[in-house]
Figure 1: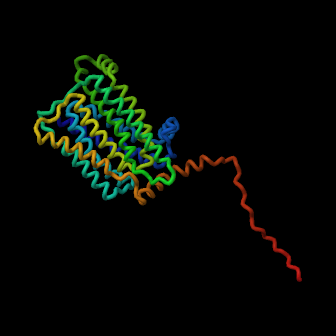
Figure 2: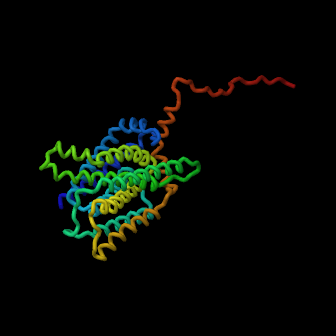
Figure 3: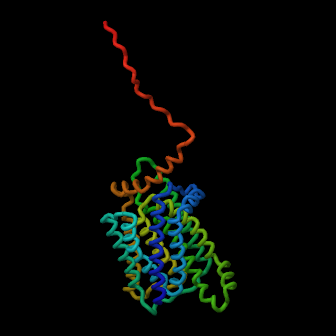
Length: 339
């Protein structure tokens, strides 16, 4: 159990570091667009800093396998959300992102909500499940993927309206959080095959995994999540969009994962109230978070995106086309004639 907690803390560190490194790299890259995924990948893969952040995120996904092997789903999500504190500290230190008082209260409420969920756990009373019916997993995950993509598209359409105030990224965070929630369920499903590795051998275990829907769900969410998260990170503050994404992912996994994999809810009234109350509090906080940046935050985002805009302006200028010459003031003096 304790090495599962250590793996969860390691995953927190890897996730926070990866998101901050990607955000820092995106601030110096040309503007990316989710409608042009090939160009987006070409731009980000040219940045060593972004590649380092992606490796950290991939290692965090690997650490999740050990977490789900030893901890109940709800307990794991409570530990994962505690990594938001590290993310906010890194964002303030390395990205210069300042959170408003309202956002700090919201983050505190989210941590309190997940703490309520963790307090509803009791060692020995919660079992770690291994498998779930494929039909149930697909019934839960496929509509969630469609909803996440639709929400992201709606946020993109609203952001293109002229004279619209800059968004904080709450809509983007919810959309990407749904995709990563499906990824989390897929990782949980794959972790159920790890105990068979010693008895069945690696080839048989890999074959069993490939027969399940989990690797394909993970591949789908990884592809869409990569493209969608990069465009969102470049436009919005990491200190807000990532906590929203993490909270949605954790709540999605804790609630639907617990039900899908048969990890029963507490029978005691107090523990049940803590778990359900914490979930409701986190949802209310998400709905009440500001949807638009303040003027200072918008100015900071504009300054961060200035190198990207400048690069686009440079690319748009044809170097072969000579610049138009401005008319020079005449240096000749007009001869005055007497009347």
